[in-house]
Length: 402
Image (tube, rainbow, N blue to C red):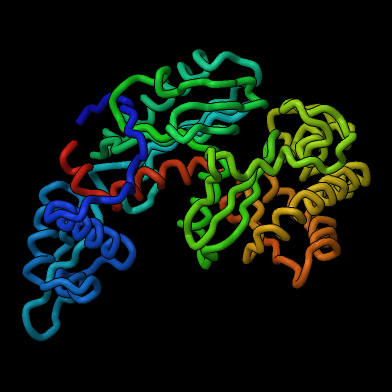
């Protein structure tokens, strides 16, 4: 099945369904999908037991989902047992897939994730995007998206939606980049630049990284502060399993929290922002190193070899992070802080001073700090999985487009 690239759907997947008979049916379809996704393979009887519906009702829902290509039957659940075994159900390894894309300051990345959470196709292009107009950036991104979609379609998948992670503030319409200082973008409508076709969601990269942590990391808490960094530094607040967006959708701009108010000027227009002390380029300057393609690898390699100047630069960056995080931790009282993105690879040299500052400055018990196993892949995976979650949340809408 060949599908165009996107159409804008304000509100995106997962919106509340109406309290009508049709709305109840759609909610029950979603309950079946989520149950099989989380606990499958399962028989119809097992699904009915878990969600509290009759087996006949569940069978009707399952039949619809199987016809739509969202569930598949794997055969007898437990061959050889006494009595007729039920047919085991699993989410389909073919059919709809989530397309995630990421616009970085120095790279573009796209991946396709199936309903089982497997990455089926991925493409990355290293390209300097700082101060580059949005149109040619999106043109390059579109080429990558088309390549990934084509490869996914070759494996029997079709794109259910597109989610794009960007390093900046995104309006509540989930398509307009209000401001991305490190890209030089302002009031940029990505929905107008991307080709029409699929449901589109544009979101902040730190938010998508936090969602990836919530959905994919084993034992992730439901309340945490996720911090990610490359050239810029972003944060996302997860409360009771959901993102805290703020009144305008701009919550989490940790990189532009002043650490030293009279410090150097920042691209955002402020002075002494955290990014000026703990962003990748700031750490490279402090370490006396020139930027390269693998900045994090360069810093980590030098630090591992005992380079005193690099270790001092990372120590100071950890101190700045600790100072900036103190305000957020005191205000929000998260269960933990999770470091992702480039910070994850540099954690051995950042954490000692970061933890020291937090312990010294926070009220009450110190907030634990952990490192994400997803690293820099978090925002891209979070974007793709957000589309997959949308399919699970409203399979009837996706089946209608299949």
